[in-house]
Image 1 (cartoon, rainbow, N blue to C red):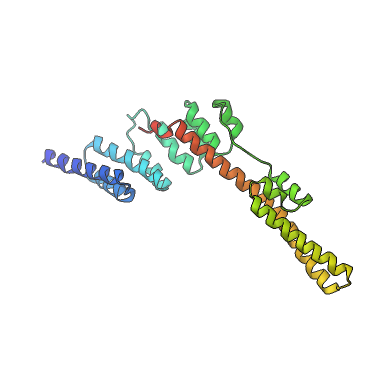
Image 2 (cartoon, rainbow, N blue to C red; image 1 turned 180 degrees about the horizontal axis):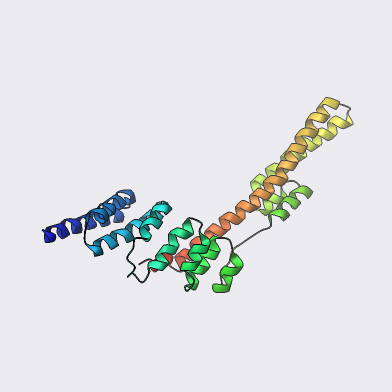
Length: 232
């Protein structure tokens, strides 16, 4: 009977692995959970818990990942490291830092993902992230509309903002010059809206530039150091 059960669950594990390989992660997790809850073999349950935790991270189910990572056998020498992964993705940076305190590479990754570039560079000195000042972006657009967005790498948006501001500003000037009071107030109001909006938009654009730049640096770091090798 025991041999038959092992054979059945062994086949379930193989089916789950097949689904995982095919990229059908949700069904793979379902099959691994079936093994976890129905098998009495500690080794199979531990394998299933590992896979469920790992794949749950891949699909963004971080609470599930943490729940099953905690069920990984205490005899697994990598359990503490594995526990750090779901905590990192859940934003529990201090907890992840505790689990990874003896691994400089994972700590550098944690600091990089949480935006602590200086601390990451202390551990891996050649990490490079292109960053720009949002305040400078807003200041540039306050001087010449659109230049803050150009500074943020969005040249088309910057030139469009410049054109809109120049057009509304010039229209307000012409209305004032020829005594068209209603038009003057209308175009002055539009100019003020576009002008202030461009300053704020430039600030936001630089922040977005920094966010994308950081995400790229994180992905490059993950590939370079093959982060997931610490799971297996």
